Image (cartoon, one colour):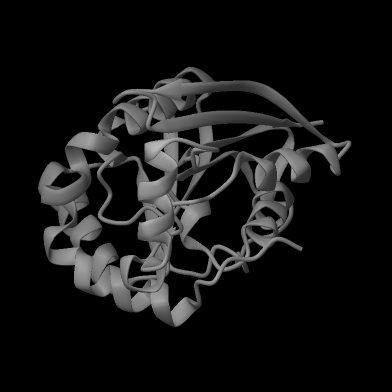
Length: 213
């Protein structure tokens, strides 16, 4: 089982602190990943679970052919998302709930697509979260993941190692390796990797699309 040094308390406390400035601090750098995943979802359509919806930055990017349910561990982040939905009149957002990504309160095969933008690096047990995501996706449906993947070497790896010693305060793991996701896929004969590509800016993030057989 792959786990990180993060705890639920670390994550909830960190994102409660981040909530008031999250959009200002992260909206621009994470926008390409949100747009890329939303573009795929808009082509697929259907019932979508947004895991780690946060302040709802991607919610206005979804088309009318998509019905969105969003969950997040942090209530202050969801409060901002709820205000965004109300202010923009987003009629395709069905529900925003406080929920643990590692223990989703939905029945098996409930959604056509599950998207998790920038979430794998912030949960204590990424494998458990992946299992939960796969459980609630219908056969033939997709899981879409966008995350920073840690560098293997070089100056960026050194910076990530320095940040990694502060992961509890940051609320995420800057050294997250692809092997956590790759090894999980290899153990799941019911999961197919459809696409893996780096995203702007400067390949800082990676989008992975998985299909449930």
